[in-house]
Length: 226
Image (cartoon, rainbow, N blue to C red; front, side, top):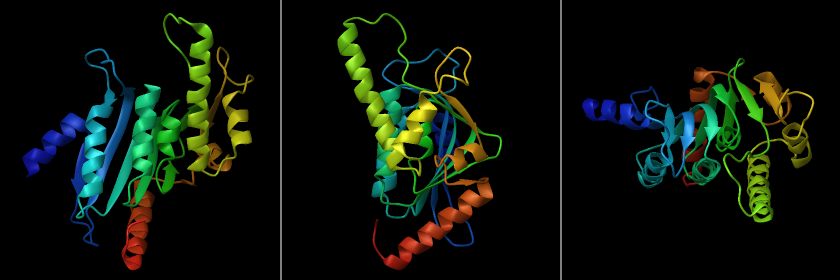
């Protein structure tokens, strides 16, 4: 069993934790590096592969022995559709979910950072909020811009729905032209993300576990799934 867990951790960054004083079984999910979508990244690049994450999240939902999910994040962003798919799936889980942002939660890492029931950010972590970017040659410009606008609206809607920030304030941060020298957007460090309403609390791993245990206890008292 331990060997299987080590192999799973090395391959997907996921692990089932148990043995805590409450007897709860927690699934640990790491979202690190770049979110890989339909195209493979260069060999050696740190990446989170959505084809690994989605089936594992389905297992978390179906396994009645798993009491909660802790998501650790340190991501530069990546494939928008893949990242949003992971965020939507985490948000739809019936088990309690706590997210902890470590290092960075940039670009599509922003909705991933807020997709749980409660979110934490360490004091030195950063969130980079900016409009969707397109790389490479763009054909059929009008249609591509319409698609980008719709995708951007989905990101704004999801982020505001799962955090305490208003759509007006999120757009103000996203389309800020005064902060980044060669880009549009904003950089929020730890407490700033909480002040803006994007993240619930500043805290670390102990705070995240404590909150998750509380959410599990509340759910067990209710005797049903959320």
